[in-house]
Length: 480
Length: 95
Image (cartoon, rainbow over the protein chains, first blue to last red):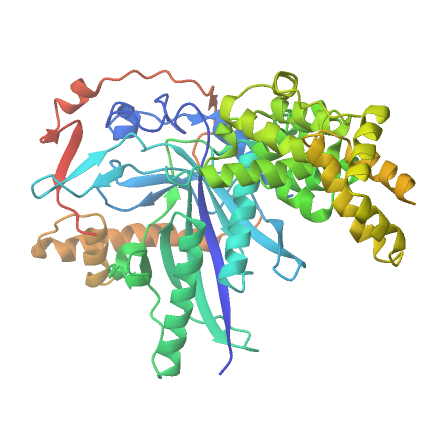
């Protein structure tokens, strides 16, 4: 039987506020345990949560970016469950009236088509603390620094039809929240966590199959592998006459499989009710206008602008706008270099190649955008050839020095004085009289290929510094 | 709405309350009474009424995003039964 996969994602995005969503404690990552957990975060009696304006503004930015309705009135609710890293016995979240309503994003499929994926809603909530299960002689250690960190939970429609689509969607959301600067996107530190709801159904059937929930996937690779495994597992169960059990499963990256968490059935009985400690959140037009006024250019818009303003191909524009630091870097290179296409080539081939090889990210590149711009500028204005530029780039990468400094010091400036080039050309022709004769007697169709020999000789004699365009021109004239 | 003994047991378990066997019937009656009281509202047409999320006719004030809390871990942990290396220790949680 042919099966169709149906996937919906829930993504927890940690917001970049300085303080927590309901308290004035710091959200900085990596502090000593419990040094950033105040009385509100610890759930002491008698404390009152007060909503952080910065968290609300970030939610509004996201809602606007996905063209969603921003709820003018939204309500915070208590989600009740017991776990030691949740000291109050409930998580403050939003249930019936979330701040961000229905929106959508577009993803690029492998066949080059674009597909619209619906976002059901996004709501504000607080994060829980961390449980450490190792090394505490039979106890569990609790660090509540993370408790109360603001989260935006983004829930997609069940519009995704494969693990690859799920990854493309998750990457798109990651791109949007990092472009907006509302999340640092750091997946190792847990700033961007994904849950996947996965089910399968026979192709052509309208009703959804029973779904399972894959929890806490913290990399795109694990997301893809966990879904692929789970889809296979469900199909195996159904094809052998069994039934899929609705449950939460954990992905084990080492074994590359999902496992049932064996949660008790009442675990999902959260008994939501409006939190009496918090009043309804009312958002006025002016607040939204003020918030979106400084909204950064979004990836889609920037990609289109790169194509139009810089004349880049769709592919180049897509690659260069993949992340905001990358797009910013590129524009800084162009500002110095002048030549947009040459700048794109140098960034994508030489710079990315060197970064890849060294295992470095762009943020810590030994060659700054201004420095790379300075090099590309010298290729564009014919000071050096593209070939010499590669040598200069290597030296810049090693020493961090500017292109102009290296070109002057090593005397790499291209020879563009035509009488100087002509002298070299004449020398080469005199030394290779036999080849000259061969060339002149050759079939005109074969001549362009034979010209390469002379160009090579001239370049060698000039130590690579002769302008290749002028060399070609002079040789053709003299041999013709 | 009728409330069964098992419902009371389930609610008590969700709230992690240990209710002695002999109190279950009494509690069932009291809870059923509360539900009956609320049920009376079903007789009214509330279609045009915005559900009340809070008894106060006010809206949420927002706090400026600023760190105002300092580290008082030692004081807070002085009342905790068990701590180690800055962590609160609790009975082992098996995942």
